[in-house]
Length: 444
Image: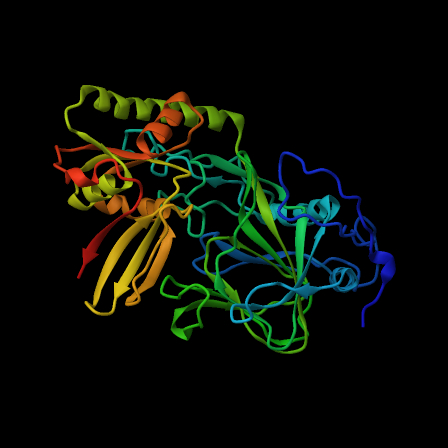
């Protein structure tokens, strides 16, 4: 057993600050004594870190091998055991893991220093479904000077939304600034697992949030327990279909797996031994210039929508119901949606009619999704995610806006945060005009 009580240090509980932490804890994680010291023993000396790209090699997921030495891994395992790992609280049909939460800005800082040279310089969302009216690819490119150290790599330039990045992110250029200082240390015993899922991420405030998961593997003397990534056919929190596996990763002690948090993954079942991991998130923040520019672009774009409303030519629509119907008709020239819209899109299956139904429901639960006994949910996703991934197929311009400007606030409060400029006048069913986000359409 690993019992070293001198590692445990408790913090005083202080009043909550304006920026809420990921989880509250009194456990303070200690930094390894080898950090900052020069040692001659191979056990204490950090290895040369190498980056291994996985999945499509597009930067959405990669492994950093040799981030922690063997003694540093054991140091964190000892602390986890001394803090006292407890059941995660999930249903054992979904997750069977022991975990404990601990906090340390020092540990976050030293780990970030080691992984930073291997991160892309930025996550650039400018020019993707931008408010700019041009179609000539004016997206902001990463300059030749804006490269990381020799350990880094160039960022692939693309107009596509990055795989696994939350669609609710503002269309800014986001720069890595550190790690979430709240760490989750987990122990998988034999039989322990976590079914396929997305990671929730952490939003500290409007200008600082996570984009990537940072998973530290503290040992490799166990059997089973791979981390696997899945395609879109795999159901969340359901039994794994082997045909849906994209990549299976078997870690070595000291590895760090970094991936965009909205990529479906799991923790495979451990068959023997104990598996230890330590999880955090890579935090990102935009620059002030990009914030100001984006807000100006939003004001300009929303001004066009408001002008159409004032002219009252019947060439605009609002509300989830009418906007989705106009989108299906191909009648939308420019679609506007709030980046924090409170709506979910469901695909429901009716066993009696063998038909699928699309339903839109407020994420806050008002109105609630109520199902008849013969109906089952086949898919659930935020409406914004679906709009961002399907808007191009309808040949319309998508403008994602915030509520930080006066026009943005007016759009959210007066038009439910969604609307469109139409190519032609559409005669909507009068009973649907003005309804809140709940509607349905049948599909064979």
